[in-house]
Image (cartoon, rainbow, N blue to C red; front, side):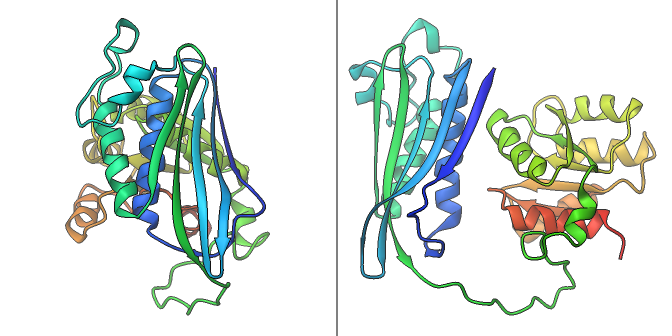
Length: 285
């Protein structure tokens, strides 16, 4: 099997100012790459403080795997757009060059540097450094949207009522699925998995859950089609279905609602947003 470990060292400042969307995309790309090249073993994602001066902190992020590794020649051309590692073992893994090229560009846009250490047969470690402005915890103004507060803010209240609830997580990306599962199980939710819309329908035909977290872009059957089938063919009109997608423009959200979904969670996933949304739809009152 494959084990995913995530760690933040104690010296990392709690409040930072940066670009969470770009940072999240880089980590997702590197995580996806690690999953593709690691059939079994471990993937370690970590962040540590590399230096601090005044209100500026330099952090080092790393994604290390126990996969097949790479030669020096392969490392040299690794971040070229659309390139593929040229050996028989890795031809089955598509799109790695593009994802890493995008990651390199995003890191550079944030003023950082990215590199890799690897050895054939012993795995790879991708790491990058970024500078952040540090800050202090501030009480944010209460949103006037009627959204329920997150479980992280009010432990033991409504968040406690999520324990034991059944979630069907519909996600074709193994790395994204693993991250979401870790977050959900922290709150003692029971998580079932489907790799596409068709698998989700097959599951719901014979089993019941309390909520569906639905990715949008998937092979075989996308999230929009699956949700329409859930509402029309399976007649599950009251089952909460929540979209998960990086597309957060107004028309994207409207498209999800038109397909019969109840709500929308943006990617990269954020713990507070996930649980405030789940509480909104799964905890009465």
